[in-house]
Image 1 (cartoon, rainbow, N blue to C red):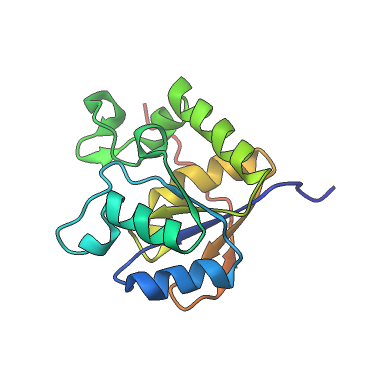
Image 2: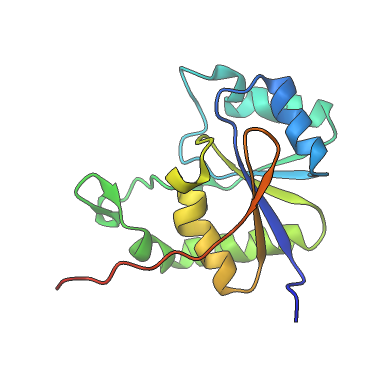
Length: 163
């Protein structure tokens, strides 16, 4: 049976606001879910939270911030191995699981794109963590590439602990 929910992902990369919004419109996105832990940047200030929220509203796209529960850089030092996020541990947190439920609920009532900053999804927690959770729940995932093409979400092998 095909999945009844589909969710896109996208990275803002270094797009102009106009080009980014054009990509969202190209894929009929009506809701953007921001999963950046810190939704601000010195390098791409056009994607700072308030600026992005205003630009999206002007383009009839709803903005939802969920970086506090779905972000890839949580403030809890117990969720890291050295300097690297421990996605397995993060994925088991109750707040994360509740965030996934909320994300799926949003996708049932509109076309959702999950956004982070990284243009290439293979280098981002939206692929390594969020997509993996969604695929486990039979949600269809499509990654919007910087050129507008889409790539199907795919499962990645989980690393087995050596301990």
